[in-house]
Amino acid sequence: WFVFVEMSATAVHKAVKPDCLAPKRKHVRKIIVDTWNYAKVNLYKALENEGVTKNGCTAFKSLTVIHKVLQEGSPRFLKRSYNALHFIRIIQNFWAAGGAHDVQYGKLNAEYAYFLRGKITFHHKHPLVLGKLSLDDYKQKIKNQPEVPLQTRQQMISHLLDLQEMALRVQDTIFSFNGRDLHESKKAALVPLVVEIEALNYITKHHLTALCERVKDPQDAQRYVERYCQNYPRFRLFFDNASRIPYVTDLVNITQLSADPPTFNITGALSDIVPVPDQVISIGSLMVEDENQARAVPNNPQQPQQPQQQQQSQQEAKPASALQPQPQDAAPANNKESEAPKEAPAGGWVSFGQAGQVGQAGQAVEGQAQSAQMSEGG
Image (cartoon, rainbow, N blue to C red; front, top):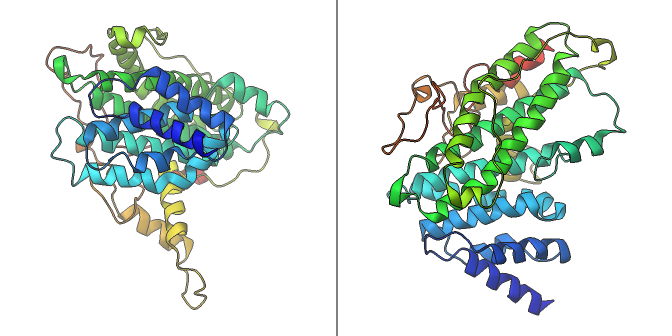
């Protein structure tokens, strides 16, 4: 067992060395296989020894490896990654602040780490969705499950849309580089992002179609449909840009999306089978809630707890950004300035209209993940 741990650590060390090249596939494959064959190998512990707060390239390659292993590694690794969120948050906050001077990797590391935190939180709250977000695997797991309440489905869709926007924010940052600045290490991260965004697109469409068949009030589905349609041009932009990079196309097939988003017909034909609703909260709020619980002082029954509504109002009052470290993350308020379209980088990635519109990393713009309002609509 000790020999195996050393071999795995060697693969990790070679995969993340700071040479601006892509992690070698044989090393990443070794790490992935190890998560299936051995239960006690800790990738995060190995990465702690690799200088993720000393070298921007090492940090970024580490995040790329984590992303690949979350997708293809053992479900046990995906589940246990929830206990490693603090490690990823350290990377995010360091490169958002102390490492922000690194023009090549500072912002990129902060964005990527924020996305991975969101992904791990998503899978923790929705354990029936596996790391690759495969729709076929998900259908297989839920085929004997009872019908869920309407707002449970709304919550699932809201979290999927949150994750879409976090992933799209990462690829926006990658494609802000071009020419020699688009290092092979950055191109390597596009491969798991293609897999992620394609799967997010399919599974979100599945749930939106199901929602449209189950709502009585069209407004209960319209907000999610509109939000998906706002992201759709950015899907096309991403896939088109990725398809122009031979490194990416040699490793993964890239979906060709139609010019227009799919049509969702809100019929309510299955509304009678929907049971009593649950509360809906955003993935960003879940991340805050989990960190607050982890920081709670134990064995202190004298300390009064704040009412839930007061806690929620305090969270909404504290803006959060992946690029500004905070004592704790909070569900960010809408920021219209952050939604201004980005210009296409010099050298010219293809642009589709307003496809460049983005908010802060993980931030829900108006009508997106305002969880307190969703419960009113169900």
